[in-house]
Length: 60
Image (cartoon, rainbow, N blue to C red; front, side, top):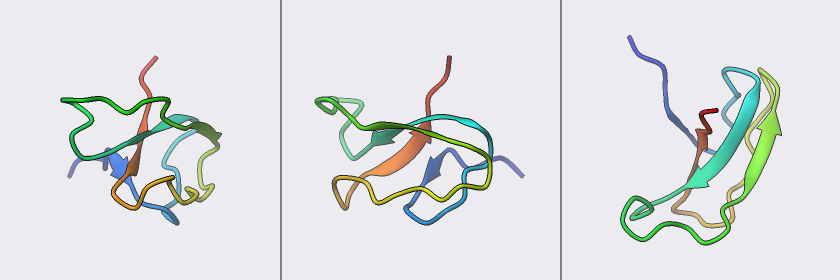
């Protein structure tokens, strides 16, 4: 089984790291100034700024 790559508000962070908002059509048009947050393992994800967005880990 693989690891989840996108997370909803209220889910626990699987690892320490930076997470960024992603959403529908972000690969085509991009999101202007997406929110970025740092979470430690087990912390809950906050509500994104748009109901169609989710959180995704930022690769280094």
